[in-house]
Length: 424
Image (cartoon, rainbow, N blue to C red):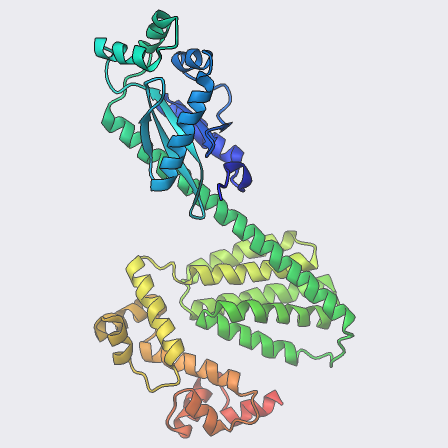
């Protein structure tokens, strides 16, 4: 299917601003065309060269220009790189493809230049290219005014334009996808609140069920579990709405309190403390401006998502990748008797290097992190009454129930039996 640039969500005004700046910086003509060769938009007050205006005023030359652009745009999209060509009139132009989600939807056409100083051979070619134009001397005069650009400069300009345009397209798509995701989550929040209103949700007025879900959310934050975070936070906010009976002041207070707890959990998960505090300052400023319950809830979801996104913004990309792989390996294998050697072998790095990464970036040892994951998973299993403490101990990778009890108490402050009794 031949998708057109007109059918996309590209921010036309933003792209126009970039094209205008590009034209001013290079002195070159630029316009956007679709894959049919039709002009879509160009910066205001930007005129084609005198040569091109004259050509387009002659007979069917306008249609020939359109056909040149159509072929060039399709070729540029086919190879996904700038396509250089001589138009039907004989001057140099290039098409930079606009790629949206892997599909070419049009091109940015630039040029209207020569790559050499006009000579007799050029004029002879020019006459052959434009044999149907009677006023050749006028055409020749206008050709003499065309800018001469070296091959190296043309390539550099085309490559720069390609990088800039397609970066902007990807950025635009990312922004739109984030907006769509935000709108979708806001709809889910509204639906959750409506469902709670209709369900006559009457439980005890204490916050025990809310706090249990809060602890679960914080556990998912520490483990970087995005899927469960989204689902849990939605359910948690529904509980908060019911418990607060829709009181905005109470919801604002609990929202700020929850954001603070989330920030601490994010730091436990590896987020830099300075970044966390700065983000919380920004959050507190924003939440003070909000006067809508749905917006309160979206703000708390948004900061939780931002915390997760920034947990691995730690510096060296190779280190980030290794840490992500190490964490994923541990989360997928915590029930097995894994050790630091197993994680290092999986990543094909030394134990000492892996230890340094965890110490430097997560401020804990590899074994500390494995234990943290096991305890968090044990907490999740506590609600399953059919499982004994011994069963849970075995499921989360502890061979000894007594050692599991000791570790659990160290992290949760009470032993597993006392903790489970508090749940029911």
